Length: 233
Length: 233
Image 1 (cartoon, each protein chain N blue to C red):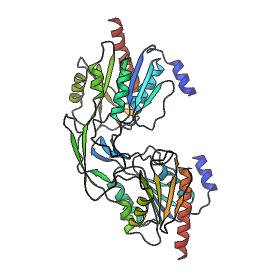
Image 2: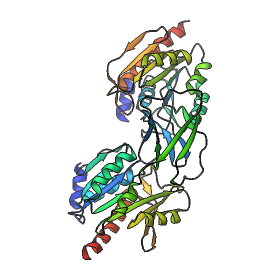
Image 3: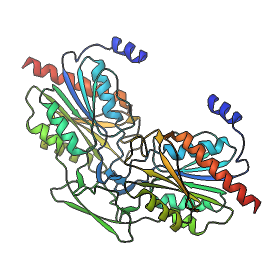
Image 4: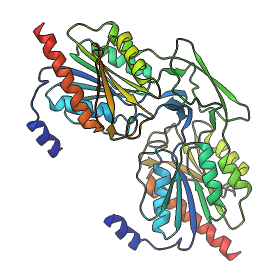
């Protein structure tokens, strides 16, 4: 905490007065009280973004699925489990946010039914019907105002640029951070990340392999550039 | 590491010369490279058991599913992801073990098929067919020798005693540690645990709410009592 306080004092307050909403981590989609569908997201990228935005003077709301990371100091952490819960909290907070960075790895599907008790195993096979969860990012993009900056993430195992470009357009993002999951030292459960940033103008910026803290700084530098344009319009 | 070394020196070597196999953590059962079925196990109970057995002088093999815990010093940690992988490693190690404590929360079911690439979401619903994973505990119980001590865990949301008693018999365990998941301060992701220990004689021992480290000590005390009986026969 002492180190964090010192770092905060030394960081220029370039996001002072701005409200930043960050989502992080995986979601858990249960089919009974002890079994669920999820993904390997550790939450590290989102937590790094929230901490850096807070150091730059922003009021930060961090909405996170289950992770082993502690609530960072100096910001508001909102803990949720499922995509439905995350959707509700993000909708509440998005309207008043200047910047929204959606780095959570939200489950696209959830079990249609959740059993109230642990399902006892039997010798028979089991079939789970999965239904779509709300598309939180598209929901926020649909009501985004011109003075808001919206950033998304794309994690892919193939066709990275095509998939990320389509997501950028469809969800009305200002830019998207694209992550090739097949690359070592990148993506889930790493402290480093090698990403490409794609913007609305079709530009693809390939960053070197960086720590997630440094990726967070690069992303927020871009956010600040966009905010300056917005403020001058 | 300095503290651990001091604690080790001070712990009586009551398991010297014994080989102890401990399983820990959840398993991940993938249906594509980034989505899987799992449970909330943190691995803490199994890691506490492995560390305590090692402090008591045992040669310890810890077989663990994905957790955020670091490899403990002074013992062999084997990291696996799926129930199939855990089954293979446990079978290899079980034959030469004197004590086997199976605290992993192994997934009972796994997706019948695993897609090689991330499944793109579509507007359609999805159905996953789940098939049974190998019953690792029953497999070990079936070939257990009279000079081996085998301990299992039961985590339930209802009918705790009945379900644990049935598991104890069916899997040929020496005793079972039963865990009521509906009780606060118990079970998954806690540092404390409130368990009952059921033995083959039908005795139920209800322990108070203890740290997982203390629960580990109580379990290994019981194991040592059983080993002494075995050695005297």
